[in-house]
Length: 262
Image (cartoon, rainbow, N blue to C red; front, side, top):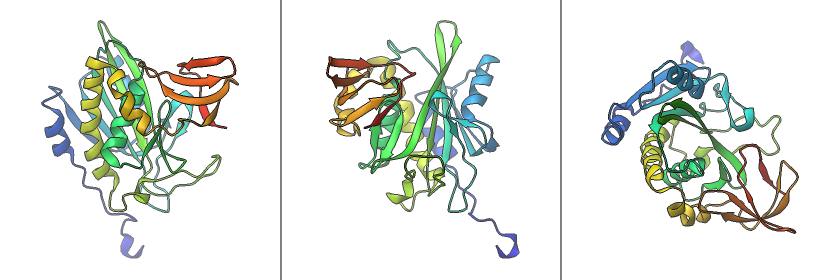
Protein backbone atom coordinates (compact mmCIF):
# COMPACT_ATOMS: atom_id res chain seq x y z
CA UNK A 1 0.00 0.00 0.00
CA UNK A 2 1.11 3.59 -0.56
CA UNK A 3 3.47 4.98 2.02
CA UNK A 4 4.06 1.56 3.54
CA UNK A 5 0.80 1.63 5.52
CA UNK A 6 -0.15 -1.69 7.12
CA UNK A 7 -2.79 -3.81 5.36
CA UNK A 8 -4.96 -3.75 8.46
CA UNK A 9 -5.03 -1.22 11.32
CA UNK A 10 -3.61 -2.35 14.68
CA UNK A 11 -6.10 -4.10 16.92
CA UNK A 12 -7.13 -2.56 20.23
CA UNK A 13 -7.09 -5.54 22.57
CA UNK A 14 -9.43 -5.16 25.60
CA UNK A 15 -6.88 -6.62 28.01
CA UNK A 16 -7.92 -4.42 30.94
CA UNK A 17 -11.64 -5.09 30.46
CA UNK A 18 -11.06 -8.85 30.30
CA UNK A 19 -8.86 -8.67 33.40
CA UNK A 20 -11.51 -6.69 35.30
CA UNK A 21 -14.17 -9.25 34.37
CA UNK A 22 -12.11 -12.34 35.22
CA UNK A 23 -9.83 -11.36 38.11
CA UNK A 24 -12.62 -11.54 40.76
CA UNK A 25 -13.24 -15.14 39.65
CA UNK A 26 -9.57 -16.10 39.30
CA UNK A 27 -7.25 -14.34 41.76
CA UNK A 28 -3.85 -13.75 40.20
CA UNK A 29 -5.28 -13.75 36.67
CA UNK A 30 -3.41 -11.85 33.95
CA UNK A 31 -3.82 -11.10 30.24
CA UNK A 32 -0.84 -11.26 27.89
CA UNK A 33 -0.95 -10.14 24.23
CA UNK A 34 2.01 -11.10 22.04
CA UNK A 35 2.51 -10.25 18.35
CA UNK A 36 3.55 -13.75 17.35
CA UNK A 37 4.00 -17.20 18.86
CA UNK A 38 4.38 -20.70 17.48
CA UNK A 39 1.41 -21.82 19.61
CA UNK A 40 -0.33 -20.32 22.64
CA UNK A 41 -1.18 -23.80 23.93
CA UNK A 42 2.41 -24.99 23.61
CA UNK A 43 3.71 -21.87 25.34
CA UNK A 44 1.40 -22.27 28.35
CA UNK A 45 2.09 -26.00 28.62
CA UNK A 46 5.83 -25.31 28.61
CA UNK A 47 5.41 -22.65 31.29
CA UNK A 48 3.31 -24.99 33.44
CA UNK A 49 5.90 -27.77 33.25
CA UNK A 50 8.51 -25.21 34.31
CA UNK A 51 6.46 -24.34 37.39
CA UNK A 52 4.62 -21.29 36.03
CA UNK A 53 1.00 -22.35 36.38
CA UNK A 54 -0.73 -19.07 37.10
CA UNK A 55 -4.18 -18.28 35.62
CA UNK A 56 -3.75 -16.38 32.38
CA UNK A 57 -5.22 -15.57 28.99
CA UNK A 58 -2.46 -15.61 26.36
CA UNK A 59 -3.22 -14.14 22.92
CA UNK A 60 -1.06 -14.44 19.80
CA UNK A 61 -1.87 -11.94 17.06
CA UNK A 62 -0.22 -14.40 14.71
CA UNK A 63 0.44 -18.09 15.39
CA UNK A 64 2.86 -20.03 13.20
CA UNK A 65 2.63 -23.57 14.62
CA UNK A 66 -0.84 -23.83 16.08
CA UNK A 67 -2.25 -27.27 16.78
CA UNK A 68 -5.73 -28.68 16.59
CA UNK A 69 -7.22 -31.90 17.83
CA UNK A 70 -5.50 -35.17 16.80
CA UNK A 71 -2.36 -33.25 15.78
CA UNK A 72 -3.94 -31.21 13.02
CA UNK A 73 -2.27 -27.91 12.12
CA UNK A 74 -3.93 -24.56 12.83
CA UNK A 75 -2.16 -21.64 11.17
CA UNK A 76 -2.99 -18.00 11.74
CA UNK A 77 -0.74 -15.93 9.56
CA UNK A 78 -2.73 -13.04 8.14
CA UNK A 79 -4.38 -14.05 4.84
CA UNK A 80 -4.49 -11.55 2.00
CA UNK A 81 -8.28 -11.38 2.21
CA UNK A 82 -8.58 -10.10 5.75
CA UNK A 83 -7.48 -10.17 9.36
CA UNK A 84 -5.82 -13.15 11.00
CA UNK A 85 -7.94 -15.58 13.01
CA UNK A 86 -8.37 -15.10 16.74
CA UNK A 87 -6.01 -17.50 18.52
CA UNK A 88 -5.65 -17.56 22.29
CA UNK A 89 -5.38 -19.92 25.23
CA UNK A 90 -6.64 -19.73 28.78
CA UNK A 91 -4.60 -21.51 31.44
CA UNK A 92 -5.85 -22.17 34.96
CA UNK A 93 -5.54 -24.74 37.74
CA UNK A 94 -8.60 -26.96 37.68
CA UNK A 95 -10.01 -29.92 39.60
CA UNK A 96 -13.45 -30.81 38.23
CA UNK A 97 -15.31 -33.80 39.56
CA UNK A 98 -15.27 -35.21 36.02
CA UNK A 99 -13.24 -33.90 33.08
CA UNK A 100 -15.62 -35.50 30.56
CA UNK A 101 -17.40 -32.90 28.46
CA UNK A 102 -15.13 -29.95 29.22
CA UNK A 103 -14.55 -29.16 25.53
CA UNK A 104 -18.34 -29.15 25.00
CA UNK A 105 -18.85 -26.71 27.86
CA UNK A 106 -16.16 -24.43 26.42
CA UNK A 107 -17.62 -24.61 22.92
CA UNK A 108 -21.06 -23.79 24.25
CA UNK A 109 -19.72 -20.76 26.14
CA UNK A 110 -17.97 -19.49 23.01
CA UNK A 111 -21.07 -19.90 20.86
CA UNK A 112 -23.37 -18.28 23.43
CA UNK A 113 -21.03 -15.31 23.81
CA UNK A 114 -21.10 -14.59 20.06
CA UNK A 115 -24.24 -15.41 18.06
CA UNK A 116 -27.38 -17.56 18.11
CA UNK A 117 -26.59 -19.04 14.68
CA UNK A 118 -23.32 -20.67 15.75
CA UNK A 119 -23.63 -24.44 16.17
CA UNK A 120 -21.49 -27.05 17.89
CA UNK A 121 -20.04 -30.17 16.29
CA UNK A 122 -19.04 -32.84 18.78
CA UNK A 123 -16.56 -32.83 20.38
CA UNK A 124 -14.75 -29.54 19.88
CA UNK A 125 -15.72 -27.61 16.75
CA UNK A 126 -17.74 -24.47 16.17
CA UNK A 127 -19.83 -24.56 13.02
CA UNK A 128 -21.66 -21.98 10.95
CA UNK A 129 -24.02 -23.02 8.13
CA UNK A 130 -22.41 -26.45 7.89
CA UNK A 131 -18.83 -25.17 7.78
CA UNK A 132 -16.12 -25.06 10.43
CA UNK A 133 -15.82 -21.67 12.11
CA UNK A 134 -13.36 -22.56 14.85
CA UNK A 135 -12.08 -25.20 17.19
CA UNK A 136 -10.99 -25.94 20.73
CA UNK A 137 -7.97 -27.86 22.01
CA UNK A 138 -7.69 -28.73 25.71
CA UNK A 139 -4.47 -30.03 27.26
CA UNK A 140 -3.47 -30.53 30.89
CA UNK A 141 -0.30 -30.67 32.96
CA UNK A 142 0.03 -32.27 36.39
CA UNK A 143 0.23 -30.01 39.46
CA UNK A 144 -0.03 -32.61 42.21
CA UNK A 145 -3.62 -32.73 43.45
CA UNK A 146 -4.70 -30.26 40.75
CA UNK A 147 -4.08 -30.16 37.04
CA UNK A 148 -3.28 -27.11 34.97
CA UNK A 149 -5.78 -26.89 32.14
CA UNK A 150 -4.81 -25.10 28.93
CA UNK A 151 -7.83 -24.28 26.78
CA UNK A 152 -6.90 -23.22 23.26
CA UNK A 153 -9.47 -21.46 21.08
CA UNK A 154 -9.14 -20.57 17.41
CA UNK A 155 -11.82 -18.76 15.40
CA UNK A 156 -11.77 -17.54 11.81
CA UNK A 157 -12.54 -13.83 11.71
CA UNK A 158 -12.37 -13.25 7.95
CA UNK A 159 -12.26 -15.52 4.86
CA UNK A 160 -9.24 -17.77 4.60
CA UNK A 161 -7.79 -20.29 2.18
CA UNK A 162 -9.59 -23.61 1.79
CA UNK A 163 -6.83 -25.72 0.20
CA UNK A 164 -6.88 -29.30 1.49
CA UNK A 165 -10.25 -28.92 3.22
CA UNK A 166 -13.45 -30.80 2.38
CA UNK A 167 -15.46 -27.59 2.61
CA UNK A 168 -14.43 -23.91 2.75
CA UNK A 169 -14.19 -22.64 6.32
CA UNK A 170 -16.69 -20.21 7.77
CA UNK A 171 -15.72 -16.89 9.33
CA UNK A 172 -17.20 -14.76 12.08
CA UNK A 173 -17.63 -11.60 10.03
CA UNK A 174 -20.25 -13.42 7.97
CA UNK A 175 -22.49 -12.99 11.02
CA UNK A 176 -20.96 -9.99 12.71
CA UNK A 177 -19.20 -7.83 10.08
CA UNK A 178 -18.15 -5.20 12.62
CA UNK A 179 -16.38 -7.64 14.95
CA UNK A 180 -12.59 -8.00 14.84
CA UNK A 181 -10.42 -10.51 16.70
CA UNK A 182 -9.84 -8.21 19.67
CA UNK A 183 -13.53 -7.52 20.17
CA UNK A 184 -14.34 -11.22 19.86
CA UNK A 185 -11.71 -12.00 22.49
CA UNK A 186 -13.34 -9.49 24.82
CA UNK A 187 -16.67 -11.29 24.49
CA UNK A 188 -15.36 -14.85 24.63
CA UNK A 189 -12.66 -14.92 27.33
CA UNK A 190 -14.78 -13.94 30.37
CA UNK A 191 -17.60 -16.25 29.25
CA UNK A 192 -15.23 -19.20 28.91
CA UNK A 193 -13.65 -18.68 32.33
CA UNK A 194 -17.04 -18.53 34.01
CA UNK A 195 -18.22 -21.61 32.11
CA UNK A 196 -15.12 -23.60 33.05
CA UNK A 197 -15.47 -22.74 36.74
CA UNK A 198 -19.17 -23.66 36.65
CA UNK A 199 -18.28 -26.90 34.88
CA UNK A 200 -15.77 -27.75 37.61
CA UNK A 201 -18.59 -27.54 40.17
CA UNK A 202 -21.51 -29.01 38.23
CA UNK A 203 -20.22 -30.96 35.23
CA UNK A 204 -21.93 -31.29 31.87
CA UNK A 205 -25.39 -32.41 32.97
CA UNK A 206 -26.90 -28.90 33.47
CA UNK A 207 -25.72 -27.89 29.97
CA UNK A 208 -27.25 -30.73 27.97
CA UNK A 209 -30.35 -28.79 26.92
CA UNK A 210 -28.40 -25.73 25.80
CA UNK A 211 -25.92 -27.95 23.96
CA UNK A 212 -28.69 -29.83 22.14
CA UNK A 213 -30.18 -26.53 20.95
CA UNK A 214 -26.92 -25.88 19.06
CA UNK A 215 -26.02 -29.50 18.19
CA UNK A 216 -25.05 -29.52 14.50
CA UNK A 217 -25.10 -33.32 14.33
CA UNK A 218 -28.40 -34.13 16.09
CA UNK A 219 -30.62 -36.34 13.94
CA UNK A 220 -28.02 -36.62 11.18
CA UNK A 221 -26.29 -39.73 9.95
CA UNK A 222 -22.64 -39.55 10.93
CA UNK A 223 -19.54 -41.65 10.34
CA UNK A 224 -16.79 -42.10 12.94
CA UNK A 225 -13.14 -42.43 12.01
CA UNK A 226 -13.17 -45.97 13.43
CA UNK A 227 -15.84 -46.98 10.90
CA UNK A 228 -18.89 -46.89 13.17
CA UNK A 229 -21.88 -45.08 11.68
CA UNK A 230 -25.36 -44.18 12.84
CA UNK A 231 -27.75 -41.35 13.68
CA UNK A 232 -26.52 -38.79 16.20
CA UNK A 233 -28.87 -38.52 19.19
CA UNK A 234 -27.25 -35.84 21.30
CA UNK A 235 -24.98 -36.33 24.30
CA UNK A 236 -25.22 -38.03 27.67
CA UNK A 237 -24.63 -36.42 31.07
CA UNK A 238 -20.85 -36.79 30.68
CA UNK A 239 -20.74 -35.35 27.18
CA UNK A 240 -20.36 -38.64 25.28
CA UNK A 241 -21.93 -38.67 21.82
CA UNK A 242 -25.01 -40.92 21.61
CA UNK A 243 -25.11 -42.81 18.35
CA UNK A 244 -28.12 -44.84 17.21
CA UNK A 245 -26.70 -47.81 15.28
CA UNK A 246 -27.97 -51.12 13.94
CA UNK A 247 -26.58 -52.67 17.13
CA UNK A 248 -28.41 -50.23 19.39
CA UNK A 249 -27.48 -46.99 21.11
CA UNK A 250 -23.71 -46.54 21.36
CA UNK A 251 -21.71 -44.02 23.40
CA UNK A 252 -18.74 -42.42 21.69
CA UNK A 253 -16.29 -40.79 24.07
CA UNK A 254 -12.79 -41.58 22.79
CA UNK A 255 -10.59 -38.58 22.12
CA UNK A 256 -9.13 -40.55 19.19
CA UNK A 257 -12.43 -40.77 17.31
CA UNK A 258 -13.51 -38.03 14.93
CA UNK A 259 -17.05 -37.69 13.61
CA UNK A 260 -18.34 -36.23 10.37
CA UNK A 261 -21.74 -36.09 8.68
CA UNK A 262 -22.30 -38.97 6.26
